[in-house]
Image (cartoon, rainbow, N blue to C red; front, side, top):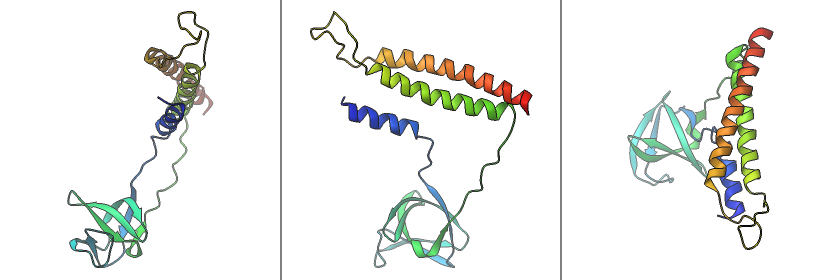
Length: 164
C-alpha cells in the first residue's frame, strides 16, 4: 500500500461524519423527475410543491435524487436547499464528554498512523528497517487511542458538569 493511499484513507476516515446527501424542498407546483439530466429525457415521476428530497449529486443545472427506489434528475431551478439550524451549545457532562472524546480519538488515530510509518531499526530485516504493514500496530494503537480518548472524555465531561 502506498503512503499516498494511506494518507487519503486517513483523511476520508477522519471526515466520515460529513453527510453526503443534502436536503432540498420542491418550490414548483409540479416538478418532473427525469431519467437523465436533460429536458428532453423521459419523465419517470412527479413531485409536488413542499415535498422534501435528498440531492445525491449535482450535474450542471440538474440534481440527482432517489425517487421510488430509483435514481432520477430534477432541475436546480425549482428546488431550494433547506438550511439546517445552528446546533445549540449544550453545557454539562454530555457536551464535555463528546468534545473531549472526539478530539482525542482523532488525535490518537492520527498519531497511530504516523508512528506506524516511522521506520525503526530492526535487526531481523535485511535492510535493518521494518518494511511491512503491521495490522497489529494499528489495532494496538487504535485500542490505546480509544482508551485515552475515553479517559479524556470522562475528565472533560466531569469538569464541564461541575463548571456549568
